[in-house]
Image 1 (cartoon, rainbow, N blue to C red):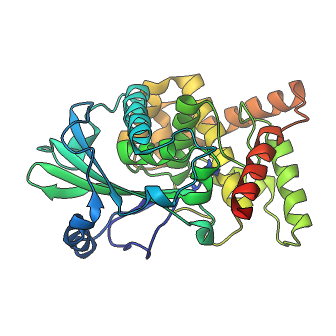
Image 2 (spheres, rainbow, N blue to C red; image 1 turned 90 degrees about the vertical axis):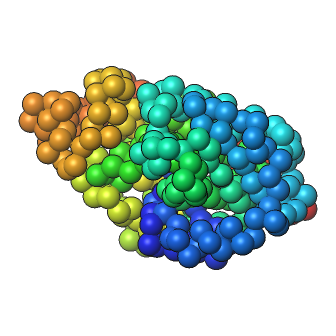
Length: 338
């Protein structure tokens, strides 16, 4: 999830979907007042990584709220301490810039930037049904940038990937379609980590009829009405809507958005190539720019994706979609019982 300028920071933390969000969960930048507040509290922040982490031409200065690490149970996480987290962080940045070709991504925020301060906040984000959020970078000084990356505490402790999703938002920024933004973030997350943290995700993320069946079953068990239809969400995927369309729905609905967006972007990359897809992402202004990929534009592209999905559904029968995620869910329960 990206946080854009003018929206303000919600007290504490925010997130990003993730699919489901990846659901893993994206969209906005801190305003100047908030940035000044962060600067005033710098003395309360750990800056162990400053000055020694250069990736893709810019120095990363990772910072953390006091005592954050002491309050985490990292038994199931894929890092065990601050040092291991920083290696994971820099490895992810390197891989995502390589995947997307956005090695000089920071110049669009500040052409003179030689460093970026990144405040990492791992805290409870369950109240927003998202897994993380990344503020778009803002100018920190004449030669610097500043951003904040939020990640949900439970998801981090359970070893679910969200960092890579948020870093993709930081590196690639915004485009005309929220679905493209979240889909690319989910794609990069899976490419870097080999997994997704969606409750309903599959690999590859194309068995969408089974996904919607699992979602509806989960909603019914929880007593939720007003289920999302396959037709409704399919209509929104890849569309020229910059705002996230499911802000006030359940976590499961959040997850569906990310699953379907990932499937669409993965298919775009496999069909047209990363270079063309990133040209659409970086330079596209509306649905009309799908002409960069296909004669007939958005409608033609969308129809081809749907045909691919239909053929996939006919050829594949996945019976254990939730197997890996049930293990993760059990880990979360165990952590909460401690």
